[in-house]
Amino acid sequence: MRKPVLGLAWALLSFGSPALAEPAPDHPATFKPAQREGYFFVGGAYETVAGKGAAVGQMFVQYHAPVEVAQPYPVVMVHGTAQTGVNFLGTPDGRPGWVDRFVEKGFAVYVVDQVGRGRSGDDPDAYGPYARLAPNDLETIFTGQERFDLFPQAKLHTRWPGGAGVRGNAAFDQFYFSQVPFIASALRSEELVDPALIALLEKIGPSVLLTHSQAGVFGWAVSDRRPDLVKAHVAVEPNGPTFYDIRFKGGADWYEKVGEARARPYGITRVPLTFDPPVSTPTDLVVAQSEAPLRPGQIRCWIQAEPARKLPNLARVPAVIVTAEASFRATMDDCTGAFLEQAGAKPDRLALAEHGIHGNGHMMMLETNNGEVADAIIGWIAGRLK
Image (tube, rainbow, N blue to C red; front, side, top):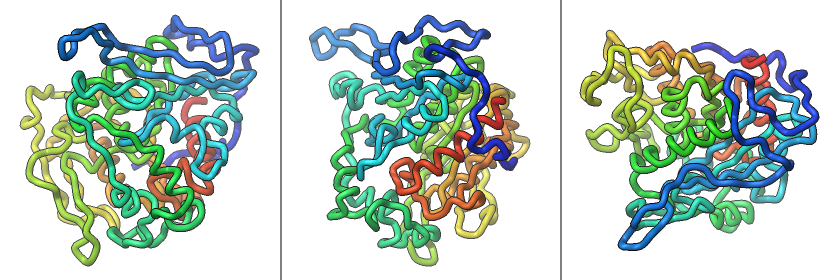
């Protein structure tokens, strides 16, 4: 897989503007904010739910911009499971978040709360059952993995504020208090969030999508449906692995596949993608598991059996998969890259450890070196979109 060029790592591009972000000329947008910070909603429609009138499908968007926008495209930040846009606004120990860093570097930034969650509004009658993550779900693989050693990279984790991210660590407690219920059906979430993100891009113009974790599925689907609106996709540890879910259990046999049903029937999404030759049903995609992992400490990948169908729309959108050294996603992100490369999309890879950024876990935007991680991502965007 291709390596990102980080020679322009912390540089700003010379696209100065005296006002807030102007839409790119190739796709005029209707929304031009008149202030540096604010919010609005996109999507949504009035429907009758449980016998009463209700709004369904709306998504909350918060925006921030520097006095002078120095970058040609805004960045849209999309959070993962059980989270909200709060992830990008600050850290649980009170330091500036990624929004601040990107604004400092000249970007206009839009932060969303997924449809059906947080400030977008939850509604079980409209969206179906909800689920929650327990503290242990986060401690074991998200924030305190060095205490549990369930996967090979866990012991490398050193970047959670105040030590291991477990109950009693003040930063973990603040983080866990920020968790919210989420729509239990992952497919339902994709069906709701994908069109809302497209509505946002139609409103603000072509943009860079920065997705984290669960939100990776939205980034691939929106890039596939509207490659004209996604100038680049930064997939920070995207939902995976390909096709199937796995469970970590530690020891020599440290993972196992969860069931025989495909968790992501289209490889990287639950909603259909534009394959060539076309796919009528997910069973048209024949899955094969590699005989060995791509690298030590990784799972054996599930990819397409050859000849592989291509993803021509995704091939049009520059993408990078960002992976932290001590994250559980380090066991599987290369499989996502291999699946996309096999399909002709050829994403770049930004393995943080290969660029001297060590010790991070899955919640890297909250950890002690979150600014350094943001700078690496900004460097990739600058190099790819110059």
